[in-house]
Length: 187
Image 1: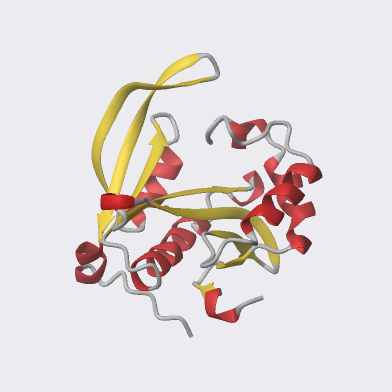
Image 2 (image 1 turned 45 degrees about the vertical axis):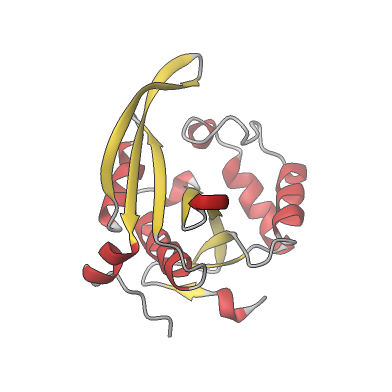
């Protein structure tokens, strides 16, 4: 594992995914409540084969864009950052999920702060965005606690579980990150 891309916070760390994570990630991801809060491209049911294919695919990407969220020496979720291209190359969107047994512990907020550090300091981004489903208030709260602000709501913007849903759009600028003392110190 490349220790350059291991970032630690109080409650968790993020690091490159590896093949030892497949079983844990697959077991936690195989949960309808997880699938209800992520895009339909995320498989459900989620098997070890899905986990293996995912880790194999993302481990080839350099610099890394997909990280294990580790808590108590176990991969309990994934956080990703997807840089845009062309004239939008100064920004990226993040996405993440955490296994249900670890919800409500503040781990998401710490992982988000760590990916902000990575995006602003290693990828040299100027803006990081995130979207949440209107009913996923816990994810919205984690993003707000990490320094994001609500930008707008896109009404009837997606179809999930055969239901039109609103999408909350949140963002944080690099200058906001710097001015609000959200700076992370990797030690």
